[in-house]
Picture (tube, rainbow, N blue to C red):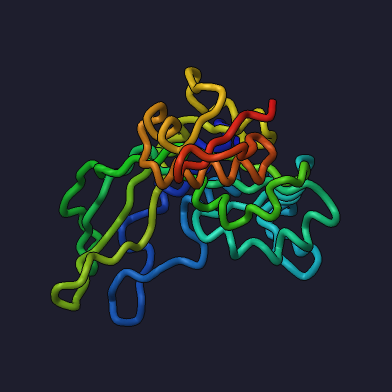
Length: 249
């Protein structure tokens, strides 16, 4: 679905046009674009044709409409998609693409000249498991076969400039995609189950998931609830206060 060739072509176009002062407000500082670079690149690598992008359906604007149905690029707050999904799913399949920053560079720039002041590797690395808190916001939709998800694993540069207000965090102005490192489909219960550790006991809970995947137990609990809503697992009892589940497939 995400065409690597189109991704590379579009991200080079974004890189070529980016100067660090691409967003200039009236006061001379870096502002924000209406469409961020990661969103732009992912949208265009899903559809090379302009007439397939920004299409109005059911009173809402879809990022991409094509042979795969509707594609929406959403980096956060999946709950904001609820109304759109209600309109879109009544006419065709919908795929939500979530960009995950597996590798990220933090770039500090001068707010007036755009000059790069520093570049460092971020200690935060996202992976496919980090989509689950967002999926939890849409759990009432997860049993629908026409709703699919893609995790796009990216390497990015995040551009920031110092906040003029003393003691405040630096202002983030944009993220520039550098590489498409991979993509993972979450279309079916089997796709969710494929993410679980291989050595799970027949009945398992968040503790076993967390240990096997090296994630926090709270994230493991959210994953299990999402997988339950998607029809991949089922709660079958408790061990003390711990909820226990079994695979349904």
